Image 1: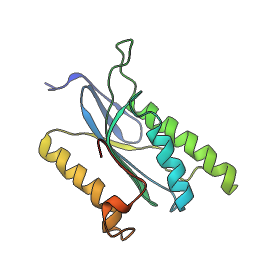
Image 2: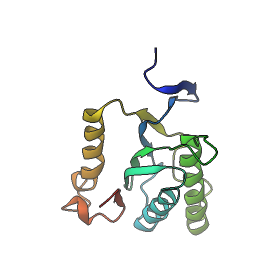
Image 3: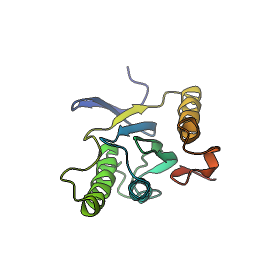
Image 4: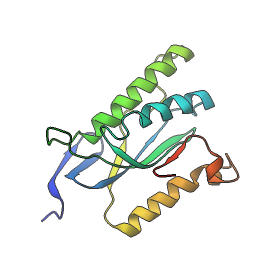
Length: 155
């Protein structure tokens, strides 16, 4: 029935589809706009697993939301890391650093992230363009290349 290897679904507040060898679009909102230093803390924490626990195609941390296209490869033991574990660990690390400086009681991110299996090249390019052009569309910069919390693999 499913066209992906090792396909399964689990549900928290949102449904989460998992499969081996796929690309995911992941997004999560922030409970309040992040300051520029907070944007950079989260950006650095999301880049940390790059090449180890996941392979990013692109990542953009905006003041009000974060979006990424990512693949989760099999590890050295042949087991694939759980996408939500990698995302939540980065959010937790960034949240702790932000709380330490801000004195707030709760991290500035909503708890659960939305993830979506990218089904084909057309959908990949739609997500790609949406992520890449978000900073300019939100008026944060004139050109996407100017935004320093935007990562594009191979660029």
